Image 1 (spheres, rainbow, N blue to C red):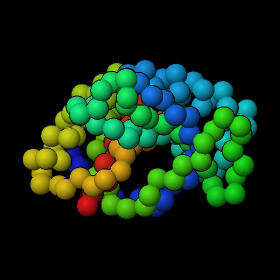
Image 2: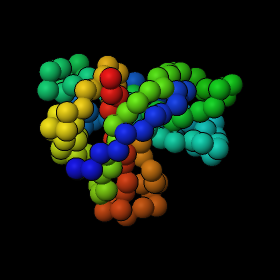
Image 3: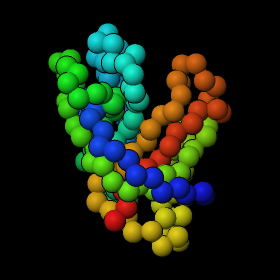
Image 4: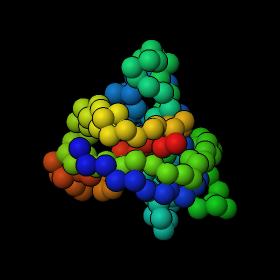
Length: 153
């Protein structure tokens, strides 16, 4: 798997929390859409949807896994009720890209983790991120592009 290193700026997001198996995070994205869509957050410049994954599924029980379905919003943008403001810290991140259906993401994360380990990268503290680069409603599943990010020390 090809890995790039990027310096990400701090990202302010409006988020919906999910607790439970990561495979069920879609419910949080549905709630995000129901709240952020009518508020116009997806139409704002620099709006990007992302998933924030706080726990390692290999060491955390499925029912305790925490994730956030989120949209990047500019400072000063009012968040509608039901969205929680979170800030993803700026820093150095490893990035890999998955092209294809979202059901392939668990396999992509496993490959990404293995590549980080074998490449000698030192993973830092903080959540893993998925940044969704195209609109799933308008993009064929085999063309969906998701960038995976892990913070580095």
